[in-house]
Image (cartoon, rainbow, N blue to C red; front, side, top):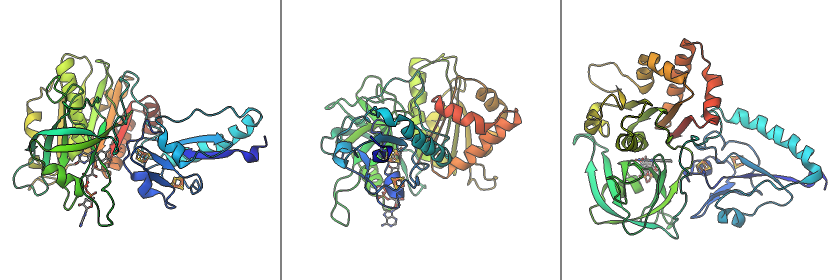
Amino acid sequence: MPATEILKQHLIDPEICIRCNTCEETCPVDAITHDDNNYVVDAAKCNFCLDCISPCPTGSIDNWRMTPAAFSLEDQYSWSELPAQVDLGDVASAVEAIEDEVDALLTQAHAGAGGKSVAPSSALKPAINQFNRARPAIATVIGNYRLTAPDVDNDVRHIILSFAETPFPVLEGQSVGVVPPGVDDKGEKHRIRLYSIASPRHGEKPNTYSLALTVKREPHGVCSNYLCDLKKGDRVKMTGPFGATFLMPNDPAANIVMICTGTGSAPFRGFTEWRRRTMPNAPGRMMLFFGARRPEELPYFGPLQKVPETLLAKHFAYSRVPGEPKTYVQDMMRKQAAPLAELMTSPQTYIYVCGLKGMEQGVDAALDDICRGVGLSWAALRPDMRAGGRYHVETY
Ligand SMILES: Cc1cc2nc3c(=O)[nH]c(=O)nc-3n(C[C@H](O)[C@H](O)[C@H](O)COP(=O)(O)OP(=O)(O)OC[C@H]3O[C@@H](n4cnc5c(N)ncnc54)[C@H](O)[C@@H]3O)c2cc1C
Ligand code: SF4
Ligand code: SF4
């Protein structure tokens, strides 16, 4: 078979994709689309511009297959995992050459998080994509509490959902989809929105088939207002769970550095609670860098004060406290350069960044400075940590 007949096809890994819609919004030629199950790439439209690669928070978009015939959209919608690369026999060397070319381009495109996302080696294998729009899980609201002070305009709320009717297995760090009721102004069903799970795997209270979300009300936002206004007893259609890499190491010796702003704290509440409940004397250290405008706007400010420093070293950064200099998470990280640098030299350290997209650059620059201060190169360490499942970024 001549090499020219082989097609290089761009595909999305349905196991890792968190259905965040970023790639669909990014693709300049509308090659990416989705159904209730999967995000997929139309081989007839994709021109390999690679614009979608760097914004994808999971690296699930970075998948390629050499194939004699393109996988159709219907094929891709039905997948729960990517097909293996088929053996192309004689054309293997030609294929390898094309793959090398693709790899070189991808290395440039992956400037952001430093390569494909990989789960920590000790993390449990999560269940993913068990429920979709056509077959949602139904949760019942059992609590909805305001987390921010009454004078804060766009409140952040702690919403507790019971899955007593439909078991919904999750791990800390995964996200769930929420199906907002109703249609948009074009008469189409509202898009599913994603929310990080803010409770540990065995429930908001141990062994109670429940999970918590941390939701910020966005002005005019469809789903955040729907969630923030839910009352006890309301029923919610849920999809997922999603995410197979932004997971907690199950190893008690793992050091976990968590860097967040706002609702980015949600997965870290799950991480901290799981460790507190199941391994409170773990030798691994936990460090939290948490940024907000002021203490009144910082979700879980009160409960966090009660978490002992021996379990979790907490460093808050406030950017809008009257009379005080603006401090961001990266400033707090630089203040803690010595303990952070010590942790970064350990192969048992895992770093997680979650929150607003705008925080990535500042955090990256701080890690660069901290590494340089102890003779390490963040540019070299970052891809290594990423490939070893030790550096994770989830921003939205
Ligand atoms: C992996 C992942 C995890 C996430 N986890 C969380 C989480 O834990 N907690 C959380 O709160 N969010 C989380 N999000 C974000 C969440 O999915 C939603 O994007 C967010 O809640 C906003 O959705 P919405 O439907 O309320 O807003 P949309 O209706 O989608 O509106 C989007 C934006 O447009 C603005 N807008 C909409 N309509 C108008 C209008 N008429 N006039 C002016 N402005 C308008 C809104 O203010 C909003 O900022 C996560 C996202 C991802 C990808
Ligand atoms: S590579 Fe370019 S054309 Fe192809 S799906 Fe990504 S953004 Fe769209
Ligand atoms: S995780 Fe990546 S591939 Fe999946 S929807 Fe988001 S951007 Fe697209």
